Image (spheres, rainbow, N blue to C red):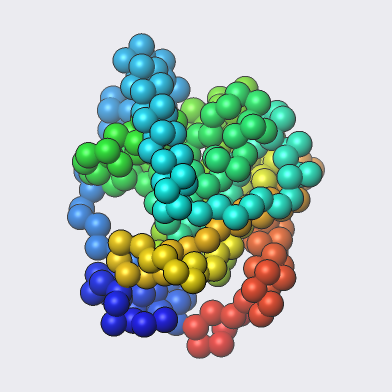
Length: 282
């Protein structure tokens, strides 16, 4: 790879990833995002109970679908295949879906590959607070209205968030959560998981459907930063069911460990090398 062709901003991001991996700081942001505003309860309608929210959601989903399908048609978002479709039965009665987080577009890759198997045809996405409150323009519109469930530093907002996720899961919806927490641009290794996604699944009594998106460089195309355009394959892994004989803490931890093991094994199978982080730490 010719690093001289990559933009300074992306080179700086790659260097931060290298340093953070070496230090084991896997859940910290590598992007220089501006400070975000606190999301208050009155500023989010998680379940689209308002007529205006439902209208904006329908409009946002229609625009987003057209936008991303256009990227796929033009070869700017490349999905080479999906494997493990035999595991999609886990979505029949509601599930938490997990995925590695390396791009603002990875949630659409998951949706595009699973949409025909989503009983209600929607995929709800958990997003960080700053994406919901601080992004402007088209992406900001998507972040606020494409069936997104924003986190918040506000305790009352998070109580509403938890209630809404439980309601959605129990009515058979699927909710995408990034257990790695932060997006690391074009990073291929699965990072250690946070337990939050698995707590949500355990509380609602639904399975977790782990997925892993693997990547390779396109031999000819580059993205807007000069980095090789990535070609993606979605791997759907066996569902992880809650062991309801355990209490929540132990049960969620058990689900988390199993889901990470599945992702680790798939990573090692596809890339044909052990999962080792900076400094030789596994």
